[in-house]
Length: 93
Image 1 (cartoon, rainbow, N blue to C red):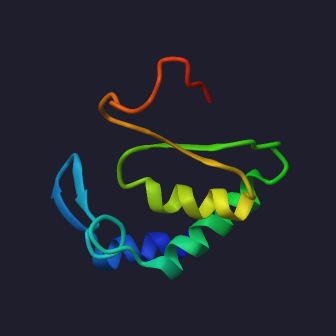
Image 2: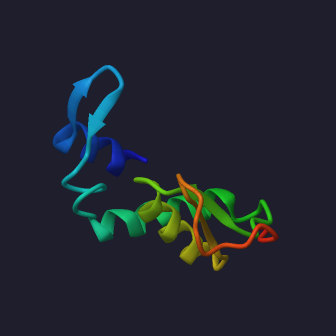
């Protein structure tokens, strides 16, 4: 995905060897057009794989996962980092 690579090169800020700051297009401010294109790219790649759900953790992956799920016409499941007080223990995906 060349557009994402260019966005990272131009707008990403390397904090250290483990952290790439992408606040201006993914974390604190979401570039919706970029996420739409990423969703299309993921959907095109996985369209023949019989995907029934898109799963992500409660993090920066929500925006691209949402876009992919929308393009694939499947539900999006977000795993929480902490237990939820409102989910029952019988909930499965």
